[in-house]
Length: 139
Image: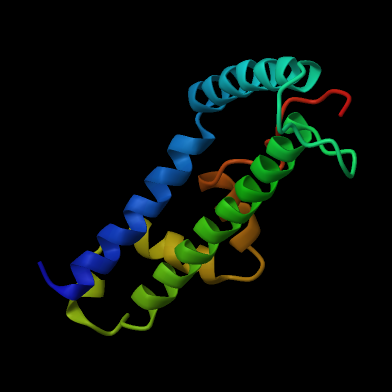
C-alpha cells in the first residue's frame, strides 16, 4: 500500500469515527452514561467527603461538566480539522494516477469538503453535533 492509499484510508477512518459518534445509538448510550455519572457526582457533592473542594464554588459535577463539554467541542473541532487536512492532502495530488483511481463519489466529497460554500454542510453530514453536552440541570 502506497502513501496515497494510506492517506485515503486515514481520511476514511476519520469519517467513520465521526459517523460512529454521530449515530443515534452512540449518542443515546453516551447520554445514559453521562446521566449515571451525573447522578453519582451529585451524591458526592452532597456527601461529607474529606478533601472535597469547597473553595470557589466548585463541585465535582460542575468540574466534570466543564471538562466534558470543553473536551467534546475541542475533539469534534479537531476531527473536522483532520478531515479537511486529509482532503487537502488528497487534492494536492489530484494529478497523480492514484487520485484518479479513487471512486468519483470520493473525489466529489473531497471537492465538497474543500469548497468554502459546502464545507460546513458536508462536515455536518459526517460529524456529530458540537453542542452535545453534559446533562442539563442546575449546577
